[in-house]
Amino acid sequence: MKFSTLARLSLAGNRTDRLRTVLTAASAALAALALLAAATVASITGGAWLDSPTGLRTLGPGTEQYASPLLYEAGLRPGVIFALVALALPILALAGQCIRLGAPARDRRLAALRLGGATPGQAVLIAGAETAVASLLGSVAGFVLFLGLRELLDFRSADGRLWLPVDQMPNVFLLVGALLLVPVLAGAIGVLLMRRVVITPLGVVRRVREDGPGPWPGILIGVGLVGFIGPDLLPDGWPGGWEVPEWAPLVFMGAGVLLVMTGVVLGVGWISYTAGRLLRRFGRGPATLLAGGRLMADPWNGSRTLGALLGALVFGAGTLGFRAMLAADFEASEKYSRLTDPTGLGSGYDTEFYFGAIRLVMVAVSVGMAVAAAGVLVVFVEGIVARRRAYAALTAAGVPRRTLSAVLLWHTFVPLVPAVLLALGAGASLFRMTGTEARMGGTTEVCIDPAADLATCATQTLVEPGVVVPIQIPFDGLALLGGGALLAMLVVVGVGAAVLRTSTDLEELRIG
Image (cartoon, rainbow, N blue to C red; front, side, top):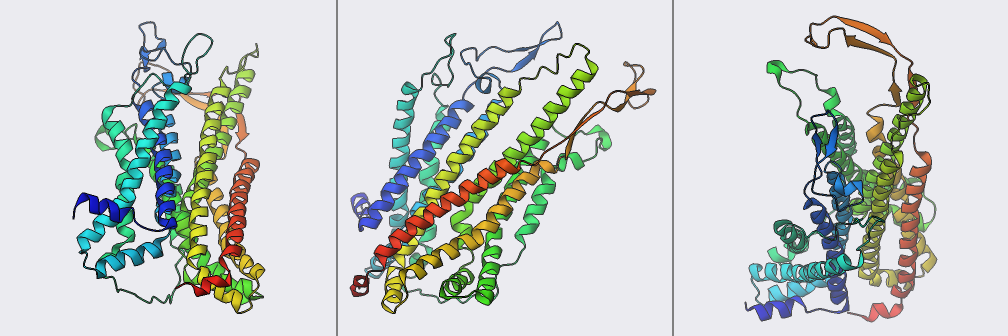
């Protein structure tokens, strides 16, 4: 197959196909922009803390041109990179949702090509090129936008130092990787979605669900919560003098968060099926019965469409839990310093720096939630348009449009509310596993001879003023976070109801 023929077949289609191409390119541009920003921060060198001969730690050279500690301190830059990559994840999920837009019509078009003589390999090329080319164009647009923002965001402090790393270009390998990651993933997803058409264009399989999903994702959440504090459960000493590596806590924490997110997302399947059974059993009226039947027929729909939103909620709730723990530590340190220091100067911590960084993370979480809600809206509207003939048939049979709108509301919010509560509870529980109170002072054992071996030296007990500060559960922040997610989904349902009114026209029955 010639490249020109491949390009022409990939760009063929109706208005829905063109809309899918535009949305895929736009989401790819946003994802590339976030990944390029992370690559820029990763390319900064220098700024490590060094031990001086006087015993004081000084900041090494290499980052004097930056005004923000998040950039000029090497130990803080990994957190910035992690936040930017986490911001890119819901955008990548949005790209995956956009790829599914108009899937039934695309299936029929590729099936017609297969019946016309196209080989499975040619069908794979067409399906992959359709999404990969759009994503590649989006990545290029994101790179152009990145270059433009470097010129616009040249903000400087009073002493002339930069607030953003606009003087840095990403490492060439990181640059190429950030630009090619989205097209490669998009092409793979496009091929995966077309696998049934590639195998056989006439493969229509009727699937009947007999047993619903089980509550096994709860095990993943439990394992993730325990794994989050895994290094604290390990013994202090190992045979042979082996010590726990410094990177072990980060690995355990990252794996714990990932397991909790996976358990929450997969748990929506069991929540949807159980909610559908309850609606079918106790519901009154056609709206609840229809919604219950749809939830039982496809319980994994919520896991597919709400995955990015719930992942952002888990991450945001965990950030709020970390802030509460940090606030308790600072309060305990402040009280302890005032008890032990008669001058009352306090601990002297720059708390605003830490809380300011947490606010930036929450801004990233909010943007991620907005992007995830946009992805849900794309899939929501696409599902309504794909079933417009069925909705038109129900309207022609006498079902009121307000009943169909009520079905959308029940079908969305019945599994969504418990899923949001589960995500907030699981995320907030991550740092609660490390403790429920902050302690300073109290009774401690110290070695009398500092030069002696710690394992054999004589010790004495020191009794100092003790301070205990309970770690508060951030109910207000969690309520604001969950309320924002529910409000975003309410807007999605409202837009879906408006699209539904235009999709129940009786003229739809004349099509096809």
